Image (cartoon, rainbow, N blue to C red; front, side, top):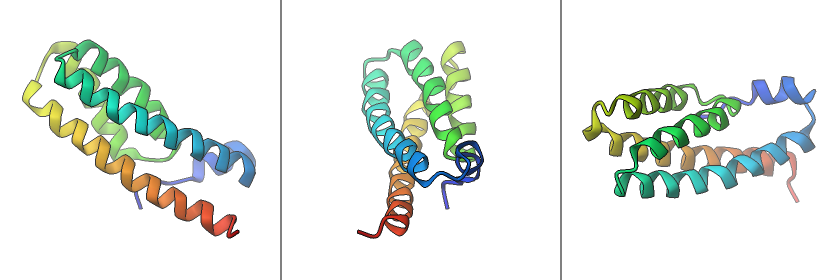
Length: 116
């Protein structure tokens, strides 16, 4: 499992409706983040890439994605120092893969609680 909804359950008082709403927001955001990260990287806009990694980290943390959160923190720190530039593409690819898999998991969760 890439996601862990314990934080959402606690924060929402285990409100299924709120959890689903937050999942839908997450799904929209990570799709946008993926495209923008790649664009920033392709255009060597490393400052914007780092800022977006910071913003994305907040989003993935809420979904309990600890490994991805660590990777995004590393990417953010590296972009501030222009360090390990050759690794940025791997970080962006990891974000895309993990967020895509998380969306699949979260869709399964939604389908389980809303089987219509």
